[in-house]
Structure formats: C-alpha cells, structure tokens
Image (cartoon, rainbow, N blue to C red; front, side, top):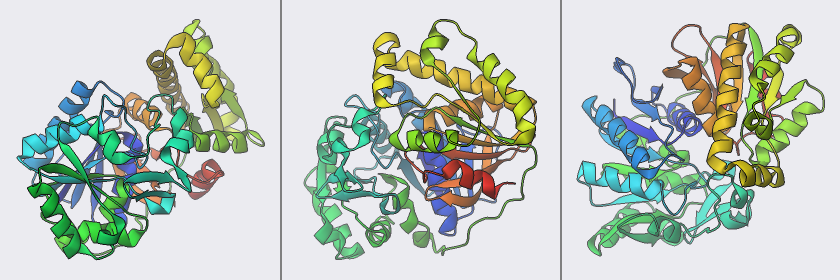
Length: 414
C-alpha cells in the first residue's frame, strides 16, 4: 500500500476510491476499520467511516483507529477525505479529526482543499462555491444535519481547530508546485498548521497534488486525490470493468439534498415509489414491513424506489417535532431494515442515495469491502461487494448525480 485514505462517510469513500482508481491506483474500499484484510494487491486502501455527524470525540477515535491500521499496513501518506461542501459544524468534525491526525503523525502542517471542479465545487480566495453560488447561499445552508452558512473556509475551520489557518490563493497555485511548496513553508514557519488552498480547475488540483508529495497528511475532498498517484510513479489507468450482477434491482433514498429531491421527483413520474414518513415512524408505524409488502410483487417487473427524501420545509417541521438526530436515526433504521428485506427477496442491484443512508445500509447488509467499478456520474461508481451474496451497489452522495441518475445507474447494471 502506498496511500491510505480515511473517509468520513461511505459515499465520500467511494468517490475518492473512484478518483484514485481512475488515476491508476489499484484501490480497495473497506467499510470501517478492516479485520483480517491483507491489502497486498492494492496501491491504495480507502477506509470508509461513519464519522461525519457523530460526536467529535467518536469521530476522532474512529479516525485514529483507521490511521493505526493503515500505517501498520504500510501506508506512506494519509489523506483525510471529507465532503466537497465541507460538511461540518462549529463543533467539528473536520477540525478535531485533522488536529488528532496531525498530532498522532507528529506532523506540523497540512493542507485543506475540498474543491471538486467537475462537480462544480470550487475554492476561490478561501471561499467555497457550489456552482456560481457561495456555499452559504446554496441549498447546503438548509442541510438537516450540517447546515453550511459560512463560505469562508478559513473561518469555518478556524472555529474547529486549535491551530492557525492560512490561505494560499489562486495566483500562487497557478505558478505551480514549486511556488506552492514555498507558500507552505512560509505558512508553517509563521505558526500555521493549515493552508486553505484555492482550486477552480483540475489543473489546480494536479499542481496541488504535485506540491504535497512530502506531506505526511493531506485533507480535502476527492478532487485532491487526482494529483497524488503521480507522486508514487503511478500513471492514469482506465475505468475498471465489473461483471454484471443478476437479480432484482431497487433504489433507496434517504438524502434530503436538493439534487436527491430532483432525482426522486424524476423517478416518481414514471416508476413505482413508496414514501417513508419519519413522523409515522415516530408514531410506531411499521413502514419497513409495509414497504416490503408493497415492493415484493413489483420486483419481477422492474426496479422500485423507497424514499424518505423531502423538501426543506417538510424536513424542518419533522425536526421541530423529533429533533434532527432522532429523525435521521428513524429513517436510517427503517431503510436498513428494508435493504435487508429486499436482499432476502432477491434484490442484488441496489442504488442508495445519501451518505448516512448508505452507511446504515451496508452495515445492515454486512458488507465489509468493495471493489470499485465504472463511473456512473462524476464521483459515483458502481461497486461490487467482495463477500457473498455478491451485490452491486451504487452509493451516491446526496448532492451528486444527474437528475436521471437512478435510471442511468440501473441501465449500466442489467
């Protein structure tokens, strides 16, 4: 193993694993800290945690356990991967985890760059943009668990870390790797532990990657990974092919992002769908059993969708009654039960929307590692479980994918 990655949620792990594999690295993704896995045939291992929205202390503990395993198995460099929209709160978890990793590795300095230009996430003058909008003006301002209402990454990270946070702006980035390394040295010498690095195009991320070859720890979105394999003498490969997996197909959506809402709305115009209402779950309704009873007779005719996706106003009303954490847990537990029931009924191809939902589903199914397959949309590949029963899983971050993503994904796995 050359590169070890610690991802704070499952879909983010799949995203960075795809980036590394497409850049030429043989990549394995594990679900949680591995037990009994020997990664001899991998250049990179991505450990998928469920730490983005846990208590900061728990996120730190999980991340340090992943770090220990990766270093024991030979990782020469560590990437802490978080979302390209820097999902976090003032209490964490990006800052506390990054601080703990720096301390554990004895490293004085690292970078922070969530940019992913292909998916319209860019950083300019330290501010994160989603398309043409500042992060704080984008739909992320209404995220049910990590509402992002400040686009200035130095301020956001500065409220979470005990260290000084500086900026390396785009003009320096455009001068190339040598200029970046010089800027890093100046920040480190002046007592900064973090550099927010501007990036508005892939060429900026490639320059950043080339400048980071000597840093033990990096932090960022999946985009930062595109420039790392070359530091190990590894060149761009091609998309991995995976054999088609038979069986029935289904879609589960727990994400309430704007893009997931659009994807669900597109599906329900022409395909069967069953809605999960968290208020009904709180009142004791067994919607998992109801959804499975509904889906069972339909699966032979084609894929079905079960969703808890809702518009921001509905999410706010639900959270006002139940609280954000309980509402999320009720939905995750219900969709996890439904996933198990669908597999029992012969489903072998499963599309899952939402990082928290994906984590709950793969844990419920006992999936411990994934082989990375071809890209569906930027940041989202098909994957195949390494254990039996063999499952094809498309695990999608809520904000990723085109409006017709569900149809497109299932069209690739027939």
